[in-house]
Image (cartoon, rainbow, N blue to C red; front, top):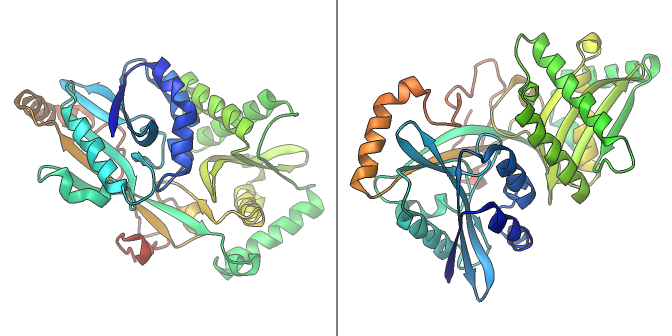
Amino acid sequence: MTTEIITTAEDFTALADDWDELLRSSCRPTPFLSHEWLSNWWRVFGSNRRLLIIALRENGRLVGIAPLCIDRAGVQRTVQFIGHRHSDYTDFIIKDGPQKQAVTRALIDSLRNQAGWDACYLNELPENSSLLSVKSYLGSQARIRPVALCPRVSLKSDPRELEANISKNLRQDVSRKIRKAQRERGLVFQAFQELCGIDQARVLEEVRLLHIERRASLGGTSMYSDSDEWKFMQSVAEGFSRRKWLCLTTLHLDGQLAAYIFSVSYQDTVYFIHTGFKDVFSPLSPGKMLFHLSILDAAAKGYSWFDFGREVEAYKTKWTGVAGQNYLVELFAPRLASRLRVAAHSRLRPALGGIPGLGAAGKIIKNRLRPLRVPESSGGLVHE
């Protein structure tokens, strides 16, 4: 195998076709590992970071990618995934097959041999991550710990079984409100895989304004008040629309946008990103109605999973009791100077707010939420 180290945006762009070909044949492909998602993230958020993409080829074909970048947190130079903070799942991209562990180990070796970094925080790794499959190879100083749970709905059963998985009270309440909204408020449900042929800018601006309005009503601030955050999401919407990976569902009442759900799809899964609804329609629970209709729509289109993404929130646990487990892997450069910088950063960490991108991962489950379980087949822990 031959190794390439990609450090320029131009070389990153040139990898696009080979990158996505590898992703399609990889162990656990998600849209958050696609070149479309990561290159858009880099264009918006990469200005104060350095690329460190490690690519392995065998007979000229890509067999592994470590999509990394280097950031600086105080005195510490930190390796993280491209797309961190915005991606619900991250990982090395490894061609599936008998060599996948060998490729993973080769990527780890190459990372260790790179200068210019002190600590490596690989966050939001799913339970079947290629990195977690070679735990012993990471070394005795590596730290692995669970972070976010990711609720998900299996869509493999028929619609009647799917509805039977939610509580009788919720099922009856949603059905009653949908009938009432159809009868009295002119309910219109729409699902878009692409925005071609419609006023794309207008639709996305409506979504942005509704997200801002909803967060303000809760006493918070929408991330989409920030121009860079919106620029990233807008570019993702446009790029995924061209590929028909977009899953934007909307609910109109009285001719107004009452609720939306912005998701993206890849292969057999719909991945939820964000949602919002108009408070004036709260008595009809437009968000609840739209989640119900969107999940049924995804099942009708043949998807196997509706993935709510990281973090457990009350509205997600109404629809499922199953969750995947994400992990954080911490690695440290085998150099004395790096160890000294990590030690200095550790003393400063309380003032710096902790590890970048980790968030409040330890505050995942509240007693008021529906208990979640990780399927035994996933190899994760069971949370009851």
